Length: 280
Length: 357
Image 1 (cartoon, rainbow over the protein chains, first blue to last red):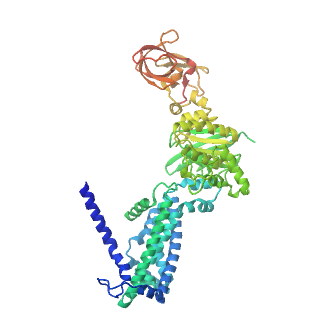
Image 2: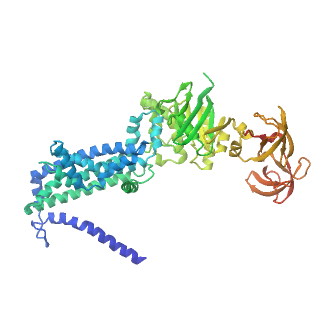
Image 3: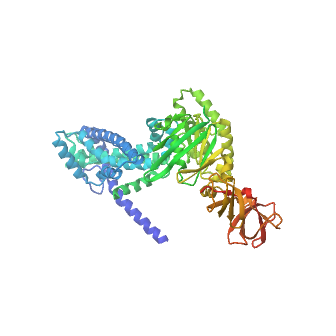
């Protein structure tokens, strides 16, 4: 018994190490006063961070990514709410096939989506811009938003909506007074998830951004110049920190709301759901 | 103003292939405590949901206070519902839950507070205003659900098995409280339950449903003492059923050859029976009695087994003349009889009921 748990522990540590040690090199080298990635570290510096704060082009691309991310998370979540409500609340013909088609971008390789969108936009006479990137990202994010929200909608009792109707509220007011507040943690999770997906999405952004790069595209371009690499590392370290804070916050919200009389925890039903959808 | 508060006229409702409610007609009086009783899947909840407006009938119509309800959505009906699982809004506290339906009432904050206080007093929940649903017990949630519906001052209160989730002791207390409450507020209550005892103790009148059809409507006493069909008879309480053969009949009486009991003369039932027909005769266990001597009894029996229920004991007895077994219940103030004892069974002709089928 003792032996099993020890080998399990070693396995777990190796696994975590494999996942996170490479990532930790980022902040480590971002404080190293050499432009080359090599041990031993030559000395401590904040120069790369200062460089990062001075870099206008980087600021612009960061700002682009935030704008795209905000737009994508909002639009995808609104579409996700409508879709999830329809899927969980209404009886309709061909529901499963419609759902499968909505979920398809989850399994289609992104590069295919990106090429297809590129051809489509150019053929349609559109211009490549941050808007085209955002629309591409919405396509990718809606399935994720749906998965999160469907599980939330399913875990709350439909008779609460009926109770609201019974107490004199029409569908619109029922949505605002009951459905929305109860589903809110799912909405927050969906907003954060979609923002994160959009923020670090590279392929679609690379194909569809015109002259305005998003942050990942900008970073990719920087990698060609070794001199600029440490600045990218500093930026990477900052993004890592922010992501960590965002995820911790999202998890805190979820924990806090778990006691709200919901039948299942969101994460477990979410993963069930996701695998169920992919099976079909 | 008519006495019929709710009229259900030839209403049917199908879900795909399943006919949940099949050509049901029912009249419920104003201020009445009316129960819909039946096993699960008999259509009683569907009928309640048709009244609430969550379902619309495929055929027939429903009138409340003489107003046609077809096409009227739930939020415009003069009904309120207490849901089976209470459906308390989890993000709101008791006060906000109870006041939920008053948004459009045009009452001031102070008036709303007074109304909330009134109904919370009615359901004995004062002091719990700031609790959330996950901080309440089952019984308290049930009171919140009641208060939330009653604050709307509905013409009809619909209750969907509201006591189903409570333990026995609490359920019995709530039965009495609900009944008292109904008398206090004077609203028509339509109460769905699968618990026959609950329906019998609480209702002014009740309807027994099975397979989407109403089997019998009447006071609890009528239903218990004069069940019309085998379904009703067996669903409500314990009953002995024996098939007899009609020897002769006239408009007043029937002469029936009944196993164990022999030839009996009995009042002709509403649906008249003629010579040669088979009739089902029913008798309640408490209307039969075991006697030590044949002075007042004429059927020799053997006690097969007994089950003790505190205030009474159920005996299964076999008539010595046949292999048919009957159930007899006796108050325990009397002697307890041992299995295998040879004793006598006494009965009264007036306690034998002929079923209509």
